[in-house]
Image 1 (tube, protein in one colour):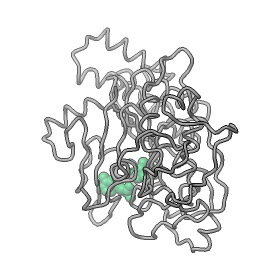
Image 2 (cartoon, protein in one colour):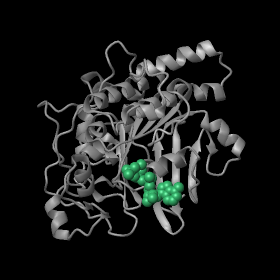
Image 3 (cartoon, helix red, strand yellow):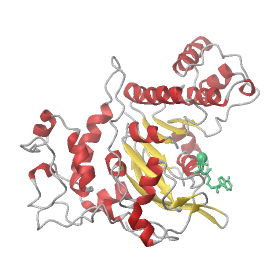
Image 4 (tube, helix red, strand yellow):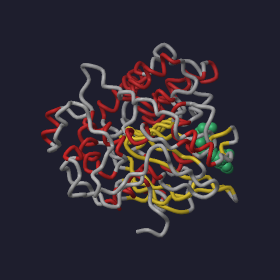
Length: 403
Ligand SMILES: Nc1ncnc2c1ncn2[C@@H]1O[C@H](COP(=O)(O)OP(=O)(O)OP(=O)(O)O)[C@@H](O)[C@H]1O
Ligand SMILES: [Mg+2]
């Protein structure tokens, strides 16, 4: 099973330039997560911080009980063996052919013989469609081929944590879809914890179990895919739909008037696309069941629109298993809450993100302060939610100073 990655209160600057502050999230073991954000918001810096190549000045990244921000170099070396990383630029050695580039981690970190190395390298090259290009130098192939070679190299050690920085940039649409399927199938085969940075909307909508978004020097949202894909938060809607109108401008931050924000918040959120399934014949993704149980435990802390989408994914057997009553009409209940339940802020009127300060959890995904309402409707489920505070920390980040 993949390894959990716990990021807690992480902040990174370069000199006077703050990249992001107080980022907290958990990559659940074996699940696929996507990190979004406008260009320059520090997604690549975040990935490099996860693998210990950059040192954030505050916070922790805990993997197998080791905080890689402060651990000795020796421990970091060991933890790094868990990772397979595809950097944004591919980071291939220019003077080595593709075969040797892809074989490099095996020769460096294992005692495998050359015939086994050859078998593994060719297997991974076939997986990414590069058979026949073994002898090419990185300078002799296309940008998309370099990306795929970088991906093959990231996979040769059968990593438990896979970080991929824009695997789809430079790929044509057909190869992007095939790559997405490859990632899902790979996850089913090795149950690795995967984090993908992408600008591809279709990838963000169909591949991950969880989505996060960096924006204005902060992780403004992170949670199950249903939360972000149904969110009416203008920056999230704008980004996930590639719209020109919204708070994100060419220079990332632009002033948006309250009136403009109110208008944007009325733009309909498109329906969710189904998540990519594993290719028939492949093993099932074991993370799917773990995720279902995890998400159901926190169901009542999520926005009603996200709750509905999550409930729609349950089969009648699962509804019975988790003690959730299906509505008699066959249609899922609307977002109405009983009068005594805490009122959810309306989707149509999201709170604007602060202009300059660290953006906190947007109102419409802020967990209820009363997660276990005895009068909650039966469809809200009998699954025990985790305490709201720990759930908030897990999914929405921890405020500085909080334990
Ligand atoms: N080693 C470094 N030294 C100084 N500044 C850096 C360094 N690496 C990145 N930065 C700065 O950090 C900011 C975030 O960079 P990063 O590459 O993480 O953005 P990104 O979100 O990955 O963008 P893109 O989507 O364009 O790849 C940028 O302003 C960049 O100039
Ligand atoms: Mg980047």
